[in-house]
Image (cartoon, rainbow, N blue to C red; front, side, top):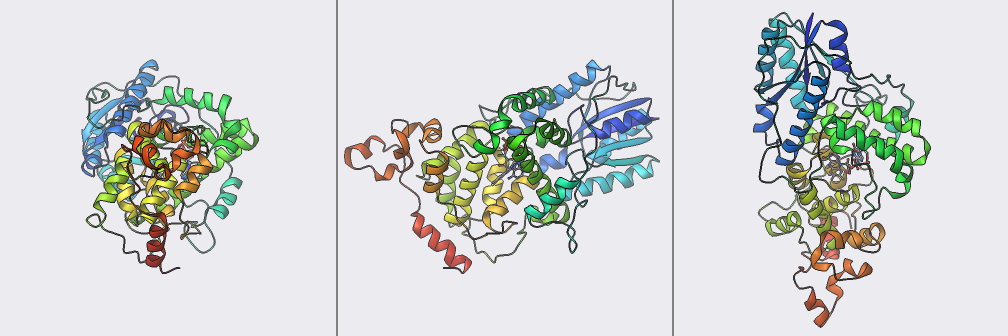
Length: 457
Ligand code: FAD
């Protein structure tokens, strides 16, 4: 038997159920990645993710070559490309990972019927991109959980599959054409501080994280200047790490830090089971609140200030600038910048979600759209009307102002927490910092507008 493994969001060799199944039943395997034209056309191929993806593909190819194989890369319509590779390799089976978006479901259906017409079978594997597959734990009355806590309880009770070792050898049949494996494109718009992708980097980062940092995670994950989270999100997005392996290894490490970390991994599965059941929630409100958001035309200047990190609220601006510089933002920053746009400025969450997807190296349909909705109060938050006050958030999570000074150099001369409220400075002192803008909105007015709009005073 000859099998094709279609790699999508699972660009790794360790703990890779689709690859394992293909190798177990076959004399030869074609490891295939298709640069999918539809994904590019949908605007999802943002420069930061394209650059990171190139790293991942090169590393995957190197790993396969060490084992006697290679990565086959194609470009075009994913179904057509898989079908041509099946013909070129005279393959009998195709293996791939299950995924949750409407696009992924459509791709799977199209592939299954096209392959059937060629007499080839498609095998779709669960627990490659999630720990627990969507639909495995459900409440009595619905096809998915809409509240995290009961979901997490049930999720935690599930038995995990074992971790699979990386293959020793991969034999690829001759005669299958490939494009060169891409190198990091020289694209404008790639963030200067973008991390490096690939399974090798991912595994090194994971080992260091478990060895040195996870123990303090429960206490420090919200500490903005401490930057004490794992930064594994891009690796999870591209699947250079297996979420199942992560949970096994974190549980083995043990302690409150590892427990808190596993809980965050469950949030990732939670959003994926919501999106799998409600694919339309990627673009439309999961819960209708009858919002009449300010449009892009009405809020044009506010939106521009938010995107560029010059709202006049230093902690918001610091986080927005971190996003542009690194293609990544701390979760606390994501929460408070999203609340600021959707609630304080009362702008449609989709405007913010789009901007995040344009820049985030971990930009992920399930995590991004559903976290945005969580913050905007159209999602699964059980307290949809809460509004985060950026000054209170700054004082709590950046008490000394170190994070702000790191990202907002115009204010670097201001010591201590005074950096969070430069508008309080008077006269000559304020003049020293006049490169930094005044606030675009009065917080009390923003709050009142949001409450009026949501019909609550
Ligand atoms: P850690 O704190 O080390 O957490 C470990 C892993 O758990 C993360 O890598 C991630 O996979 C998962 N995780 C943590 N928090 C969440 C969460 N709230 N929801 C789902 N999974 C979580 N995450 C993305 O991966 N892609 C996105 O596009 C994305 N967009 C977001 C947009 C908004 C408005 C908000 C509030 C959050 C968003 N998140 C997104 C979730 C979270 O902010 C990031 O996963 C996290 O900051 C990544 O950093 P880390 O790997 O150091 O996280």
